[in-house]
Image 1 (tube, rainbow, N blue to C red):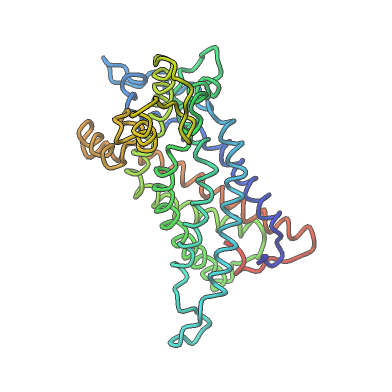
Image 2 (cartoon, rainbow, N blue to C red):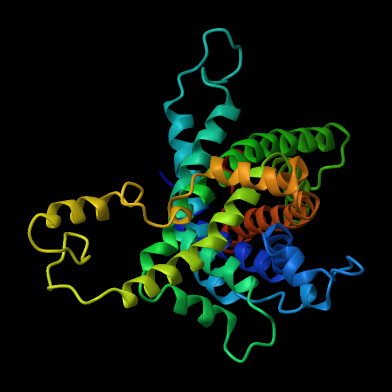
Length: 359
């Protein structure tokens, strides 16, 4: 189902360009947020005597950027494509309400927008998770190291690359409620601003006006959603930062174990002969039952309780204000550039994008 005036390529290009713009601008704020939420924040970045931030806190603020750019472009394109197509499909299938004089559907628009954004987020997170794990661990590498921070992080996952997806549930667990909150608020706010400007005779119909309205609406909605979902973000950061240590631990453990007889299970892991074969294979399928390092399969709930025990209730909200600021800037620029890009690309071909087809 194609958008009026826009091709799928337009959506991919606009989404990718928007993501690239945001990454360059707000990435340093994201790095600071990761360091604030890290369990090693006070050990690495705070002077124990004066409690003042060390200069190291503000060094290497772009560490890990390259991995994010590589993954963000396809993940953002996948998000917007899925969102637009799903929203259009659900709107098309939405039966008209018998109690409405307008063309409003039986299912309220906010529910359609939340559903479409949630489905799009699940697709996007599958692409973005490895880069997010690499990024957050690279952000914690000591600045000035002779080896590139991203390369240092990748080495930890060399023997167990599947560990890069350990943060998928955590990332989706944060992004799903975030987008489910942000997009309905964004759509409602944008519509209200446009109606107000039209009513007051202020509307100009330019790409710049559309972009500014979208940026303000998206930024405001994103800031609210960011604050509300901060506890989930703190837990997600802890899980992703532990992924590299878990991968390195498992690699060291496998090197220290004596060589096996060459038998492997369906996942390529060594098993012993005889009676232990089935048991070992079953343990590889269920690492929790086998007693492997708990942090590799830590539940978000357990990590949340650990944070509460270490830092108190405030610990779950660490970095919330900073996250709200960079989300306001990032979301505003992200969706503002995306929508303006779609309009611009359509106008270049002499086509028109209808208001209802935009975000």
